[in-house]
Length: 174
View 1 (cartoon, rainbow, N blue to C red):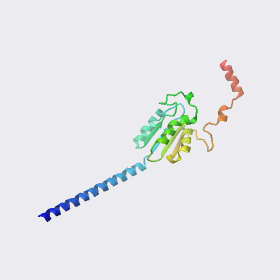
View 2 (tube, helix red, strand yellow):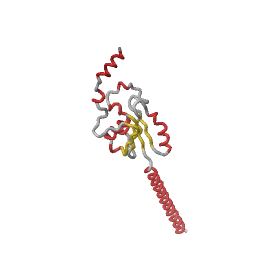
View 3 (cartoon, rainbow, N blue to C red):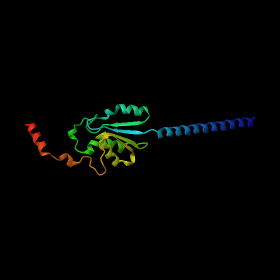
């Protein structure tokens, strides 16, 4: 009788072990399935143009999220939720701080795809140089796309004063 009970107990132990192994295999299969799904999913970081904010991407966000992608739309300095006055922005670095901080401090599962519109093109170019290891692609939508070696803004282009235009402006002020 004791031998018979021992055999039943051994059979139960073996059966429980087989069941645990089947459960581990199902868990491994679920993990492989999640990895396959994530392989086709991306993390998009959307950067608005001058005078806009993250709000301008609301339709794009909805479609990307519906497709299962991760989406981050940022408000750059003095835009959207940032209430500071545009005149108080003293540098490009200050303007880009929300994008740079996001890339610097985010723990990302995989590289992001940056999308920039209008002036957002210069912003994502700057970010690409600062964090090449965190960015897989950059998409420029009707955006400024500086050439290699270009400045964010060419100081000479924006400081050159046309004497005739200045006379007209002076006359309009008077």
